Length: 131
Image (cartoon, rainbow, N blue to C red):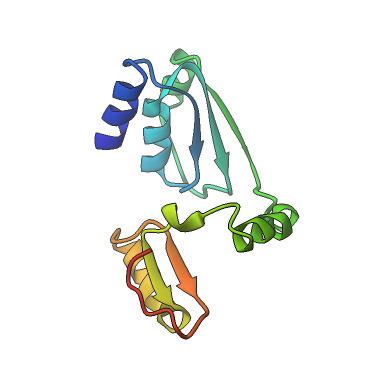
């Protein structure tokens, strides 16, 4: 609710032109519908198995929904090059950083909603608990 209200506030009560849904749950689809403006577009990646949402909100809101797989392998080499050269700083996306040995804790944190995105550090020097 807070995120929806913030987006509505930032857009003068209208909603966003485009919303990208990357979680794949019924709740996240409902939030995407609520955040988008009439006539807006909701994009999603991945395959949301067993997810249902109110199709009437899509229809009567005159909204579009587009989906498809994320071609990670196509973009990964260029993306990693940019990250390693410091052209892209992914740290703002991650809210928890853990050493690779704590990968199970990272999954637990996401499952328990204590973290949204976890950065696993392969480096032995990485012992920070926040990104």
